[in-house]
Image (cartoon, rainbow, N blue to C red; front, side, top):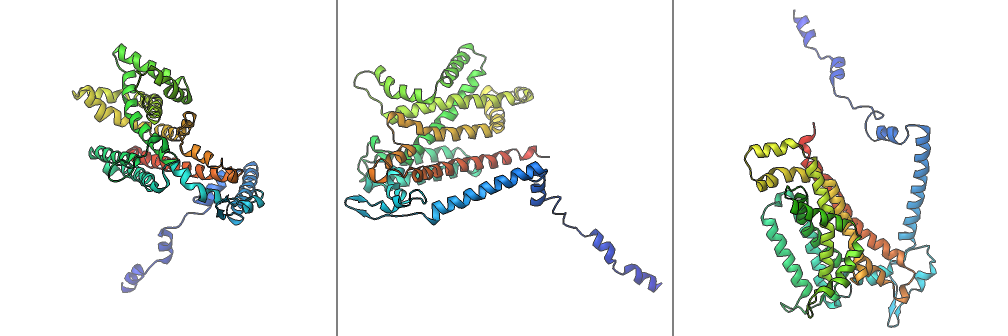
Length: 384
């Protein structure tokens, strides 16, 4: 009996090995399986993948050689101007980043007084910090509105000056990245709540309000942004009483707000229409008022459904701020174009446009990634 008990209690290596967890085959899951299914599923797919890989590798090697290996990062500057002979000797085989190092202040801050550049630089940091705080869900409280109000007040004080020992700088001297951030931030911040009201107005049962919202949306969406900026800059002052003049930047900001609100209103209305009818009926059954039903039940769900198109519209308007050049406002792109007007730097526009494009890409890519993460987090309850 003792031998039988000992035999029964002895380890079974074969059975234990069979029950132990095993890693799945590399060709079934993982990167190799994904590549096999998506890139090398057939001979045509394999040929296209290899051809594109060759072109991509060749372009990457060429770009690294142009942008880093053969690049020139600085040139001597004399009282007669920048000496760009070394850059021109490259004949396009290497990048001349010296134009960026020499003109980066003008690209970022426009014609703002040189000795006061710390003020728009601090404003840019305040905008970025405001974006980061607003993106964190733990700060989504009523106090966030006070944070926005206080930050925007500080930004206005820094940009205008005239107090606390800072000299006054008129808006005509503003330019560069700070103008792009001001136009896009104020434009989206004021256009978004206006778009919600317009979207609700289009679904209103009151004919006058509904017709007013429909006319506004169709009229604004029927013309390009450039025409609105032109009207705000040239035509609108003609209708003002004599002696009253609204600043050009403010007129452009109002035009961008009205234009953005019309497009965002249609996105919000799409979310309202996509919401099941049962949500409206359930809110009515609870005895909630119209604004309680809209604010606590309908609107949060509708906005959750349209996060991708909302952020896509935000990104589009962030880039559309470059159109203010038509009315003489020096935004980021316009400042970059103006930076190479100087004869010594003519012919090096590629480096300027690559730099400006990289700045736009950083902001737009950050918005895109944040929207993807926010959408996944808010729709986590839908995953089965």
